[in-house]
Length: 318
Image 1: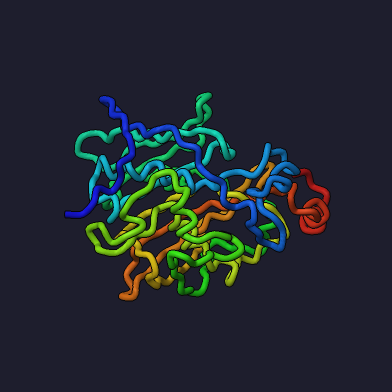
Image 2: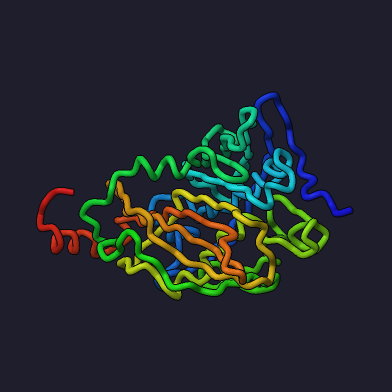
């Protein structure tokens, strides 16, 4: 008999499953890209108006895993999906709580949210298993996007651009590069929800599985080897993210291939956004997982933004 997936204390009400208060750890102080520190570095974040280095969004996905496993059992590890819009940043030391509203009878999708002690909403979205019968939170957002006009940072990025396939692997003690300067082993030492499924073969598959939050790391691991032709250096952050297991789980120290496609470009007064769909293939060339990621770039963090805007579009107001 295999071990229980989680022993997280869960509060159940008539309408929801509620996880315990947790303080996620920030592991990206040393992250670099475009040869500079990221939004997760205190000094860089403070220059852009944040209190300090922010906790990376998918870190929060771990707190929903015990709720999904309680609601759907083993199906959660095979075909679970979290689809989230990040609403506010979280700093190390702050407590957050995951809430999953129970699905309506006969449905396999429900609402999720994460809140701070003061009620601030960190994220909201949907959780589901199996074949989607309704739009996920991000599928719905994609349908409502305003197209990007007058791009500068993303001027050379086009919808339907697709990367070359890349082989990726996550061994237990493998440091995951400049983007993720830590290993799975280091993450498991501080992850908010521990599980024997992650660290041993004491599970239905008889080998360790990759936590959902670390699938984000695996899928982004080699993105710098075939980057989008975006202007830089500039600071970006995750604004929306969906991770879907299609034929899961994914396993530690197993080789996969990933392919990225730009599926939408959007923007706001302060940002330019590239929405990228990543597909993960196993050795049989079957899609085993996907990720939809909205990487937002802050216009103010790109030094020549105003100069290049005028060069491209003249003095028209933006």
